[in-house]
Image (cartoon, rainbow, N blue to C red; front, top):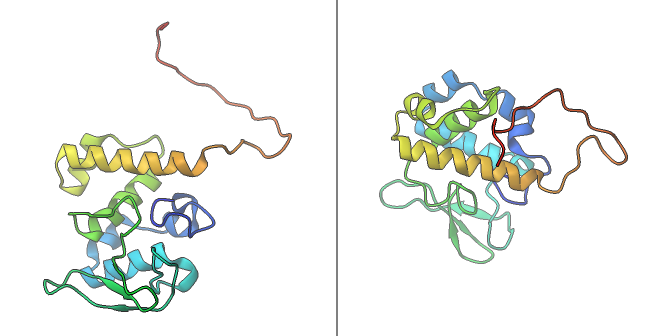
Length: 168
């Protein structure tokens, strides 16, 4: 899934939490509030308490970097990790608030979002928005890969579609 690989039962973009992420509320958040929200989204089963992506241990403590960057250290395996470790946001350079906003925009957009529009909305470069959108789409595709529509034995109907407009 987008926020934490393998630890949530339902894809985040399909969850109730994604539908309640308000873009205005995200941009009004302080850095600490954005970090707490990201933790709650990443680890919903533990109400935002960090879970080690290396060993799965739930006993981690805050050991921030000298520059204030959020980090955790697992008491079981003694490895450091961040709220984005093991996710598509790992080794991120943008603030967590920007990633939360990108998720809100992506989840609430009916027909998709262009990289140009996303870059304007987030105040990032076109290239950063393009890569971010592709990461979000790739994570969604990986999550639903192999699933059939409608359940076992059900028939799926499609209203209509447009596929390229020319013969390949």
